[in-house]
Length: 510
Ligand code: NAD
Image (cartoon, rainbow, N blue to C red; front, side):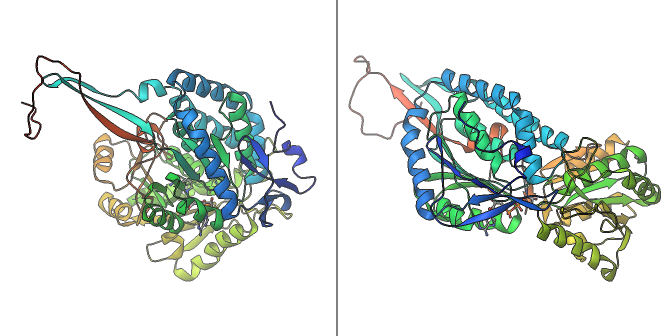
């Protein structure tokens, strides 16, 4: 394989390495003169400088993708499937290299990084079935001598704009179905942890993706806007925060593109009095503090119903001191740092503010964070939170678990449904009837029954409701295939001299 763009993770801390674009099957150094710092969040040291693309550089990537598109879309389905299978093998073979790059730049612990790769790989596996997924429909004799059939064709050049919290999995959610469908792809990964995307690009090349079919441009709003406004980009997938998602959706659709923009979250976990309290506490702690709470499917609010509250809070409190916080490269560490110093300080500011809003800080993560220059904050538990408080209303995106107490199931349901976000939610109960009613009534795109992080498997699609998604289609799974293809219906008649005549009437089917 070609030389690996990202250096081995143990070298990432030695010096500041340049992180370049990937255009036309090779690393391309940025020419804009602008770049951004990349840190190892566990040490607080700058390890990389990522190029920020200019409008012209984005234009070059799009032009390269456009030139590569006709050859790729004409590549047979079986050949494309074969390449997807090879991608699957290579990603699996190199999963530990990918995971180490993720931990070095994002901070999540290695086992969690391996989990991210595994969940991304499931989407690649789904895309291996592309010949079956693109099968159309056929109606023989729709009218006399006339057959009608439907086909799905790739959109062309499509773009993906991705967040910092899943630097490998979220790009895979997008490029695996997009490439399998025959599109050419331009990825704009997060500027905070960009190395994984270039490493994946090299593996895609080794697997047989032709040069120019997959490209990476790094950067900030300049690069994003250039993609959103480029006339040759046909579709935009975005995953990130709600204000940016709204902007992306408005701008992309305003420029005539199809767009799916997945956004922020405030996921509530409802615990009913009949729930298994230990199981619910394990789930709340795992889903609240895993990946330092930097998951869009993290549980950030536990809604304790009736007498569930006291034993549940006690059980969560007991579990918190046992969580080992530190450098995610260390095998015994369970929770790593936050992505940047600024983000850590922002998360800490919610803890600072909570008492003045009327909430009660039960465990304060500022007191137990590891020493050093890393961007650490330990798990925090805040009781008595309510709508109207910043700690309740805003997406904190850190290891801060809020508790809100209500008396009835109906009050709990109302809290979830009145929340402006609608990504994931969960209910913990032993009562199947109530769980079924919750699934029926709740206003969220992904629902867990005694499952705290209900990320759908790859053959379903992922997406929220309300302010958690802008656009019509969810991402990956069957809706991913729909998003990355356009439908075409063919009505066909072969000349039959026996039935041919002039008829100026509107075509009838009966
Ligand atoms: P972000 O919105 O700050 O950034 C996402 C992408 O948009 C990045 O590539 C970034 O460079 C770009 N960007 C940022 N500001 C921009 C601007 N003003 N104009 C144009 N582009 C801009 O998000 P983040 O901090 O990287 O990721 C965390 C957020 O992503 C959280 O809100 C989280 O809930 C959300 N998220 C959602 C999902 C989901 O599936 N719904 C999944 C993962 C993360």
